[in-house]
Length: 333
Image (cartoon, rainbow, N blue to C red; front, side, top):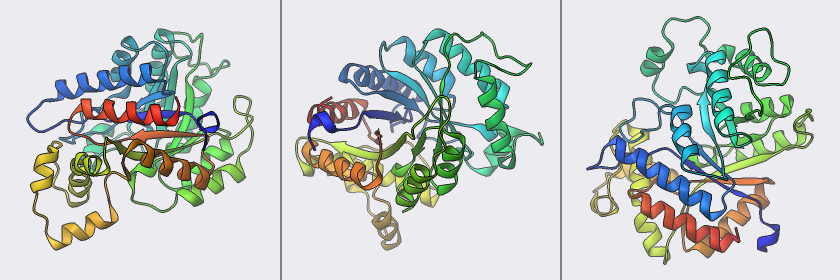
C-alpha cells in the first residue's frame, strides 16, 4: 500500500515502570515518547488507566494528560481509556472540560467499562456506592455525553467548554462495538491485548451497524496493535522479549516491573509458561520497519480500520521512540 493511501497512526502508552527505576522515571519516559510522537506526525497520543500494577504508572489519565499537553503542540491527546465504572460521570466531565480548556480541539476521551485492575482494587476505587457498577455503564455514558455537549443538562461541568472532547468507545469484545455503533461514536478495538480473536467480528458489527450521529455521520474504527521495529528482525524480537514476559506475568499473577531484554533472554520458562506464551506473544508485530508496516497494512485490509493505534511494552523509552521513528518513516507520515 502506498503512503498516500495509508490510514493515520496513533500511539498508546502506559507509562511502564522498568526494573531498577521508579514511577517518576516512567512518567518522564511517557513525556519523551509523547514529544517524539508529536514531532513524527502521529495523530493521537493516548494514555491508559490501570491501578495497583507494579509495571504501570499511568493511574490517572487526566492528570498525566495535563503534563503531556504542556510538552506537545500539535498531536491530539486522550485517554485510552478512562474506566467509567470507577468514576462518577460529573467528575470525568469536569476533568476533561478542564483539559479541553487548556488544550482546545486536542482532547480525546476514550471510555472503557473494564476496571483496569483486579476486583479488590476496583472495590477500593468505587467504595460501596451503588452508582459505580458495570451495570450502570450505558446510563453513565449517556449522562457523560450529555454533559460534554453544547446543550448540557442543568448540571453543567466547569470550566465552561469552548471546545469539546471527542468521545470514543473502547473495547476488546463485541459489546463495545455494538454500543459505539448504536450511539454513533468512534470505536477503538483493543487488539493489542492479544487475548481475543473477536477483532473481525467487532469490526464487522461496528461498521455494518453504525447509526450516524450529528458529530459522526460516518463510522470511524481504530484498531490497536502491539509493535516493535528495529534494524533487524532478530534485534526486534530481542527487544520485544520484555513484552512477552509481561504478558506472561499478567496471565499468571506474577506482577512486577518490566525486565530488561537481557534478563528476558535469560529467563527460564516452564513448559506451562511456554504454552501460555505461545498464545500470548506480547508483541504482535516485531521486525524491521518494512516487516511491521506490511503486517499493519494487512491489519487495515482485514478490519477496514480508518486508523491504527500502536502500543508496545519496552524496557527503555528510547527503544520505543526509535521504533516509532522507524515505523513513521516507513509508513510515510
